[in-house]
Length: 68
Image (cartoon, rainbow, N blue to C red; front, top):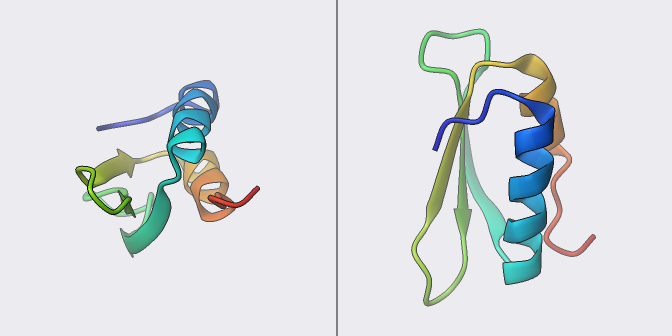
C-alpha cells in the first residue's frame, strides 16, 4: 500500500493499532526512488507493507507504537 499523506497514515495507523500490528522491518528512505518501506506484522494475520515518498509520513511511521 502506498501512503503519501499524513491524514491517510493517521487513519491507517489507527486501524493497525486497533488490530495489534507491530512494526517488523523498515527499509530505504523517502529520499530514495524506492521510497521508505515499513512492514507490519501480527501473528495469524497477513503482513502489511506500506511505502511512502513523503518525509513527514516516514517520520510519523517511525513514531508508530502498537502499545500507544
